[in-house]
Length: 109
Image (cartoon, rainbow, N blue to C red; front, side, top):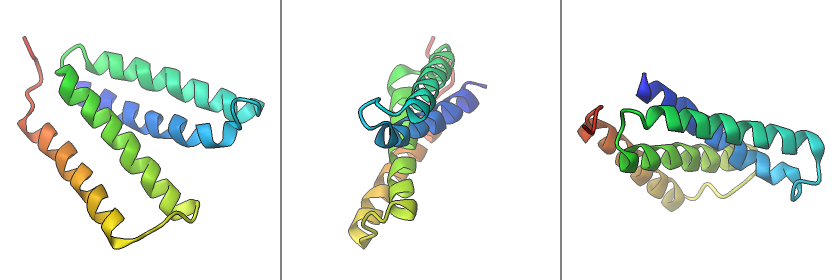
């Protein structure tokens, strides 16, 4: 269950990272509320995953999901660069996240 919490936490991390763009320094009410809710849910789910997952693994995967998702969102919906080298580096992050999942155990105790 910890891995499910972690994956969902990563998706909400992506949500608040993207939401920040639309808050305009927290001057826009609806995007600000959305962003804050995503932050709270993301951190809560991350904390649940940390009951059994190693902190280094969980945090890296959490930020990796957020980073990959945010970059892909920018490329697909905001017209950000789709250069091949950028995609290669995103794939490096994916390989790292998958690698950590493969080599990590569930319970650090």
